[in-house]
Length: 60
Image 1: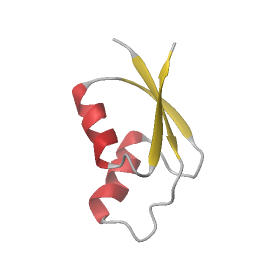
Image 2 (image 1 turned 90 degrees about the vertical axis):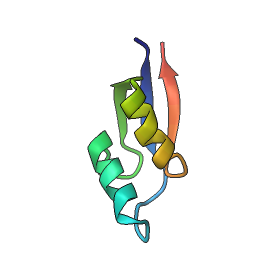
Image 3 (image 1 turned 45 degrees about the vertical axis):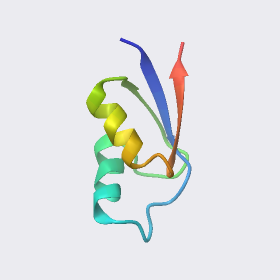
Image 4 (image 1 turned 180 degrees about the vertical axis):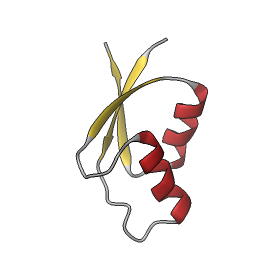
């Protein structure tokens, strides 16, 4: 399975509670923090929920 690199690029301040919880579930706590996850359907769904707050790249 391929891996994706997720970087938080915008703040969750003044965002709905579910978006804040999604960032926390992805392991993102601070701005410009980067995490690497497997590209499973559940992770991709979480990324889709907060796609305006994060940037996503494939890891080679």
